[in-house]
Length: 109
Image 1: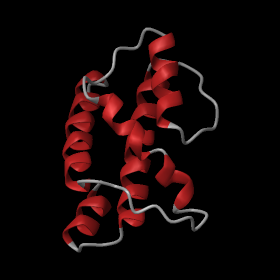
Image 2: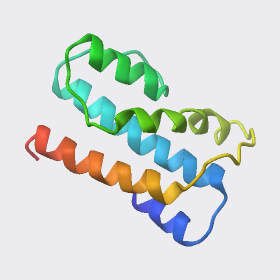
Image 3: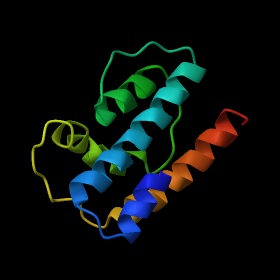
């Protein structure tokens, strides 16, 4: 998340910011799944990871659904597709920071 914050402050391209925001969301969701000993496939799809949590009765952060819009950035940045449609990256960063704090409490770290 620190990289996202630096990129936002530097007015970097939305593709770069979106990629790092997506990675943070994905890793936090996978941490919750791993902590709950829940298997998940190799995926970068945030919505799929949320669905796996829901299907396994794993309660999630209240604003988690808003992060599903980051999924396309996992692919686009890696494979040089262009998507400049990330609106208000600072708001996503704020949500991710709150989600990270929530995860730390849930995982007791």
